[in-house]
Length: 159
Image (cartoon, rainbow, N blue to C red; front, side):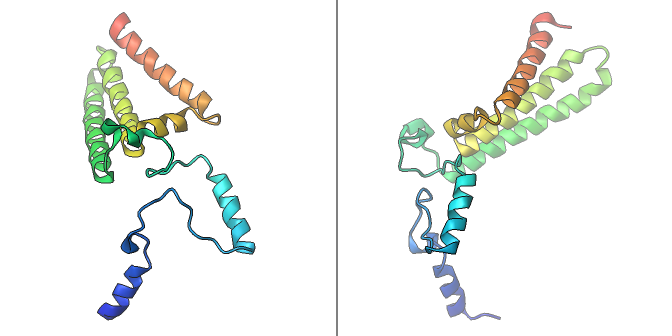
């Protein structure tokens, strides 16, 4: 069983234990073979925007300045709401032939709550940049288009 001193030494190796909490700076990388591999990895993950960034971002606004714990709580609340909506959608499958709009609305609202939860977790601007990136653009339009048409035909047309 490791002693308390070895456990404390192991904890000192973590950046947060040394008081370094800025995720926006890259870790020090040795030059040479490892450096080129690190640069290849960072170029693959180039669209990643960290929560703490030196750039002007959504965290500079007071209403977007949420701690990670508050973001996690917001995500959990949205996820619980989505689970409730999916449960209502599951229960309304019994009357699907009579009232399909009830199923469609509850399932669509649950889906939107999941998307909103991820926006709260990663930040709304970051999430929108992720959704509207070049690679995901067709899927984003198809997803939100189908949700929009589902809500339109459920509420306005009342099929």
